Image (cartoon, rainbow, N blue to C red):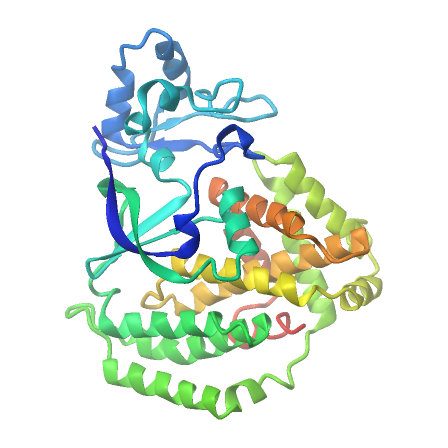
Length: 409
């Protein structure tokens, strides 16, 4: 039986304050989510003798596509009704399995969510996804939420992602630390932090691709020298000065973001509230009509600014995601930063639209709602962000300098 244990690990301050809201939560974790069930848990649930739970499990538990011993050997289905909830949830939105049998009986995904734990060179790190409304709130409402601490936190051994030695090498950890430090520089406008990451990623790409598959090593001296050069450019102001001449290409920006916004309509399960928020934003910007006037769209977007506070909130959300979601991999440094930039561009676009719709600066709870719904959709619908990225690439955003046509404020 899977056992959750408290382990010492590096984690952000907000995890010391986190606890599940239960029935007070504004949403349900598993809405529209076909939850994978690992082989061991699948067999355990199949043989559960509880008379009350047995018919529920029989209805919810299905054989998946995974092989024997795999983590996707089975899955828990969701209802076909509008609420699209897991079949094991009761009328209060609580898990019947958890209530009767305890956390140890849950599949790994259910036991871990929203936490993400990984082992890097033997050191455990844990962050959490802002797809959870409470995690999004903790990150947004506390400017010190991402301060790293040594904490004792729960985890299952089976849910810890182990970073391969070739990726968790000293040189790659050096790259990761440098990127995270740039993203954490709150005194620099967020778009400039992302732009710098794109430019640095491009310069690193060729060096990182000189990866010796036999030895699992990259050229540490080359990477160290390149990062030192960028560090000097940051210290003497050259790096930021190079960004001063960049301006947003208004028509390309509107065309690309409006197209990416339409991806939501193709989702298998559409959260009505998520769709309503995006529609509200698009209507306010003038992008809701079939034949929108691009000039008017550009003018409306340019005339509506997000507050510095909202930009700080977005900065913390993206920094948390970077800690959780990417560890610059060989051959993927540019792609990692491009995805982070795409998330920023989408969230900024819709938040500007909501600001225009409501004719005032947004409150924290309004930003929290959009943020958690966006990330909830991205993890429950695995094709969502790739489909959005495909739209960006179809618009010609292939190289880092192309993205600089969209990022500036």
